[in-house]
Image (cartoon, rainbow over all chains, first blue to last red; front, top):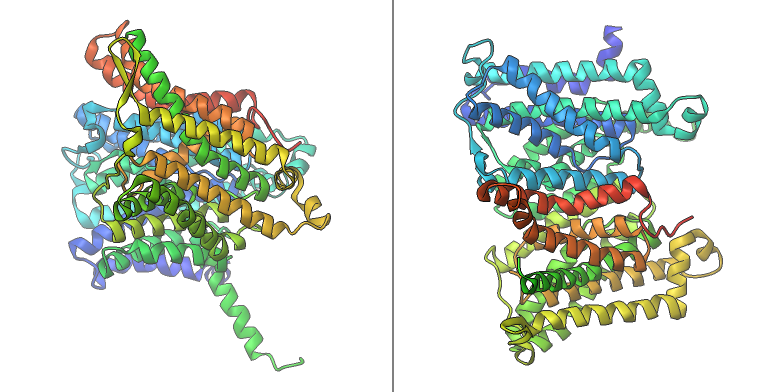
Length: 323
Length: 306
């Protein structure tokens, strides 16, 4: 089983291994670790969105709202001087899941384009609400008094500790996501993505399955929001802007919808690309935008599909003509 | 709240509604005929405003700016169609969302690179400056009324074009069954291109009209785009009539909600929390209306496709 796993998933395993080794192979400096933490948090959020898009076939353009609600839960508790992670994390995840349940109850009644639009609309609702919270700084955002405490310890303050905390949660989310997709629940979701009529004909009611998936993805994004707030020690309504939802969707597609670890690859590539280009020029989006268009038009299997395509090319190149 | 102020806000709402309609009309046609989500439609509105403002400054007159901005936005729409959208018609909605999102990133940044991040100003035309008296002691700017009139006139022309001409019949047929129209020998690609370019020009027209009353700045199209999506989803995708009614509804709800909500809440709350909660509820109101409509009629008020 182990050699098979390595053959099928060498790329994500390599990426996770590099992330684990990063502090010891020359990326231990403050700036590099901050960047990697951001990449891992975005990967966690992208995994949660992948469960919806790749798993359940629900294309949400409002996922940044879930992330933002997790982050604003940290803010609300911080303002009340509650910073213990054992309280903050469940509250944030429940808040995000609750928002997902409420909005999903309406959104999941629709499908296709309408679902994209209505999730976008709910995301904007959350965005405007965050901007009007003057007790938490309104549009200017809110600076945290400090990072969350883990069991009373200032563990998350330590850069290395935070790095491995993010990595651990990311690995847990990837494994948990795999288990979820392989379960009966996940199989119903995936089957409904391919052919909803047939699944209905088998006697399943899709609504509760999709709503549960929406809430689970929301809770996971809420967790990513807690980490994001801690990483930046600052939260602003811009965390919930619809452009952030677009970014998340791009990460998922860039990585590829073929398998869950595509979200990991896409998010890491996205954050590193963004960083690299922004060093190159102030107007880096002039390059980034066309890259996005080109990757959508030509990179159909996403990054996760690249090893398979390369293997196919090599096989074809190695084969004698007319064989 | 006095009657006069309510009247002013209602007129502002209607005027915002017709601007939204001009943007949403192109969007709903592109969406309905080609089954293609175009997030970059809001950018056309922004380009219209920028072209109008800078060309008007160059030529020294609002009318010259308007006359030059229309072909400029039309050309821009056609180039975008040729470069990007043509390759997206056959793809799923997810690809369309992402590719057009890339176009937004590029064009928003391009506008920053060309014109800078500072807002541009555009003067209203001389003939339409000043105000007229609505009620004793209450002035309303003529230019805003002119926007309302121009928007309604465009809506009327669009209705004639779509309902009473051959090309309009093709567009309507395309919205309800594009493969059948193609099978009947219509060059559907050319029809798509025409609709796309025309939609881009309408959005550009809305941008030029709005430029003198709003600040012309990068990203100004994004907010309008999202409201235009709300409009076409409420109105029913592909329906111009639905877009018109929904645009006026959204314009009114948005404007009146933002201005009246704080006052309404003050009846039951203290002044300061009422102002905050009112602003929040006011800006959320259109989305609540949309959720309500979709909860009752998931395909919008005037669904086109059976």
